[in-house]
Amino acid sequence: MKKIFLITCLLFLFFCSVSTPARSARRPNIVWLISEDNSTHYLKLFDEHGAETPAISKMAEHGLIFDNAFSNSPVCSVARSTLITGCYAPRIGTQYHRKYKLVPLPEGLEMFPVYLRRAGYHTTNNVKTDYNAIQGRPIWDETSRKASWHSRKPGQPFFHQQSFTTTHESSLHFSAESMKNDATVTDPETVFVAPYHPNTPTFRYTNARYRDNIRKVDTQIGAIVEQLREEGLLEDTFLFYFGDHGGVLPRGKGYAYESGLHVPLVVRVPENYKHLAPAAIGSRIPGFVNFIDFGPTALNLAGIDVPSEVDGKPFLGKNISLTELNQRDFSFGYADRFDEKYDLVRTIRKGRFEYVRNYQPFNVDGLQNNYRYRMLAFQEWRKLYREGKLNAAQREFFERRDCEALYDIKNDPHEIKNLASDPQYAETLTRLRGLMSKTVNGLPDLSLYPENYLIKKAFDNPVAFGRSHKKEIARLNEIANISLLPFCKAKSEIEKALNSTNDWQRYWGLIVCSCFAEQASPFIEKAKQLAADDSNLLVRTRAAEFLGLIEAVNPSVVLLDVLKKTDDPVEAVLILNTIVLLRDHAPGYQIEVSHKELAPGIIDFEDVQRRMSYLDPTYQLPVKKKKRKPKKIK
Image (cartoon, rainbow, N blue to C red):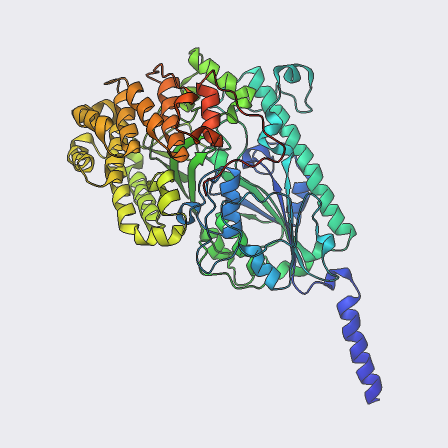
């Protein structure tokens, strides 16, 4: 009898472990399905004007919809770096798209799939990496266009990530002939056009074509879901669908607005692991989640401790309270360099309000970026602006912004009305302004220094540099925030900054002058002095920029001189950004740039080449060899 009982127990345990595929995984599988360049505005599941996505909607019926998911950055390499590290990019040095220098991870931290591999997971990626940080230990068992969970050992849990390029920006780089001849499934005459866009045939067709692409991605995602179902894996697998950052129509990807940061997120919850979901199946979650939280969430679902070095926290798995999750109402966003185009924008979404801090408001949104302007909609928008055919909301993209903006997203989802000067919202503005300053100082935010300086001084160990320079960064932020004061209160502080022996305090003092524009005229003579003979070429650049913006002095001589003298290609990209700004936008100077006058080696730098191909009619971009990698700073 004892033998029979023992055999019965062993058989019971054996059949419990192998009788069904659904019970073969000791830990849940995790799959990320990522549509590129896609904000919430293009899916009907999130926005009434979006496309129908039946496969994703079906996922939502057996899962959770996150109404407030944010990518932290509105561009791919920075967003992916945020996802894979769980860290705010301006804190760890991964904030520039694309990197000129790879940075090491914070001490003691690995990219999160490393922890999954250590715990026995099979990790695969199909196909993009595009990180701005040094990978360190191997994170993928396989990464290729054919990578899938099929290469794992029998019964091994897996983490699989797959990107769908169907919605990528390049899909809208069509020709006028294509627009004329290629019909769309979505009717262009009935499609919604954002109020900041001109409602023209070009914009209607572009919107329609993009919604068609959303439908195609939905079909592709549905096929993956069915594949998991057919293989008996679906009810053991957490299936995430999300966009890798904001939508790709103009003022989406690359711009720190809701259209660039607010992403769709649906998580299908497997039947066998419903206990790891904080809410009932089919729920909509109003609590905020961010890309910094996605890696920690994967680890928590797998039962792995989340490293203390990350900035994010889990939103699924054990010990996640629905009450606490729904109380989360904060998102921090950042925009720095996008290829050759520089800006410096930080955002805070707090509940229904978004606070936008434009550190360099004169760097207009519509500043030339060669890749962006391949799109006919971008080209037409700028053409209509120059012809004076746009309304006030549509013109803003090409004009200097306010130093700070406040939007009520509930009542103004497209961020058309800036409430920063409305007395009714003064308390909210003050509160969020203070929260922004606290966040920037607390990181600390490395972008208070220009990128070329960070490459030379900080990027061998960005986190350590930030810690040791935390007080100086806070001081630079304090100077930058002088632009938020009335000029009568700011004047003496500007004077201190311009007379500082610290290069970057003078640098920011001049940026503040440009923010005040003509109000800062008392500093014209000081700016002339700095433009003529400051030892720092970027200080000279900012002085010439200020003088040019207020039409006190033609900046051409100074800008061409500093461009000729620099032997740093990243510094050259910064100088060229100012030249394009002052040439293309008000006041509009005739600045003739020749690639032949650059220091040796500067023209070999890819983003310098992009600028010169735009500025210098005699320069031709070199023909790229297949698989040629752009030159990076060593």
